[in-house]
Image 1 (cartoon, helix red, strand yellow):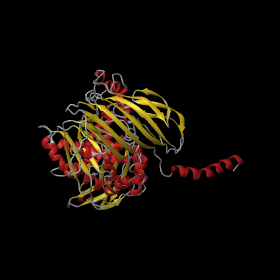
Image 2 (image 1 turned 30 degrees about the vertical axis):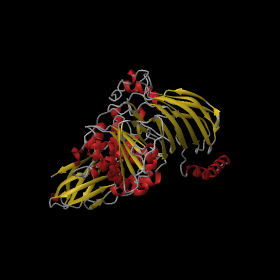
Image 3 (image 1 turned 180 degrees about the vertical axis):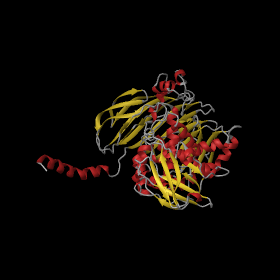
Image 4 (image 1 turned 90 degrees about the vertical axis):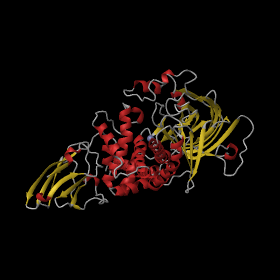
Length: 614
Ligand SMILES: [Zn+2]
């Protein structure tokens, strides 16, 4: 070793403890919002003050910060408007509607004053993002206080939030306040709002909303003054004493959430359901011929879904969940959801379940949805299928994920597929985005059960919840949990399924008598993505056996799963080899058929060649 090399070696050695310190445990920024908002309901405008306590838990010094001002998206020629009009397959809910909004119909959110620790700051409105250059940088581990005054106009409902929805809900208030963009180990995420996903910082919200007394509100937080407000929120037996005047202040607090939504309408009916586990479910909807019966029936399904999810995916950590009629379809928010309400029962329960499931993935795990949309939408779709199967289906199916598989395979064979790792905003088409995020993301989990065993996957989901709740996990964090739970190496599964569009196609090439009582089976990998193979042999006497072909690179085997025929043979398959041969110690005449993955969990884009019958 020469002198220079040994110097480098010393540097490397001495840097090891530092590196491991930096990597152990992950930091995340901290926020505490206090907002006081006055709403002029007839004008659809509001003014507010915000005190934001911001803690920089990163090891970096910050010289800039960014706030989201989402309502500015609803203006002609905004990025969202142009994107919505120029994308090849426009979202029909948006289309060219933003371009046609009149001045009193547009949305805006504007900062009128901003300071940090009492010193006024310079800032620039750049579409849906406020760029702020700090006078004094925020040092690592420092806490600072931003104070701002803002005013906004609620846009005519186009997408998600807004006023006067198609079903007549006055105010659906999501993405309505200046929201600090997230800064994490991958840097700033000041994404302009063009219509897709969100990412926020976990923290506490204290929100006071003053509005016309006739309005009934619901949303993210716990109401702090229920006996003053009434409208069904009051404690049992309490006589409500509303203060004098035409307005009422609703005071909400929400701990450990990364966003705050509220909705308001004078016509809301408010149902309150207290569950045995201490959670209160609130339903707010406008009673009418299309809603009254189905929302009455919904009262049994929301608690049932919450209970099922708590059992299978981790205990729901809040004391409240609100299902509120509003918005333009279904959209998830912490502790709450906005859904359209004039639906047949199956559709109403379906959308409620989907948005409730989001509380686990979007709400509590809180991954960056722009980068890992599929870990939210896909996992949510997966768990929704299971929940609907358990609480709603008249005859529960063994395999409720068929729709997701079909939709993924349609995408994979369409020529339009883009990798799951594509940033949500940057997919070329809406079709590619939704097929990826919802269907391929959902297949990711069901197929993972095929790779590591369903029981390992199910235990892994609870471990993921325990390890990563409130910590913004990324794809590697998830894969590591599943590796630990299964004892298998899974990097290849992530690389192929998430970072590429390579697809799976395996086939049975030939089955021949090799010697007396020996049959030679040749399997072929036709597609580019390697996968372990369960090959099930059915015999003429009705018995079945499994030949298991794990990949060499998974460095281990999944346990025999419930319901799978006994394993007669295990033989590792190197991914480099397009074909593999198996010598089965059975006479060919005794074999009725051989089939790759009869469980249907392998997302094989061509199942025609999976089975050979004799
Ligand atoms: Zn969703």
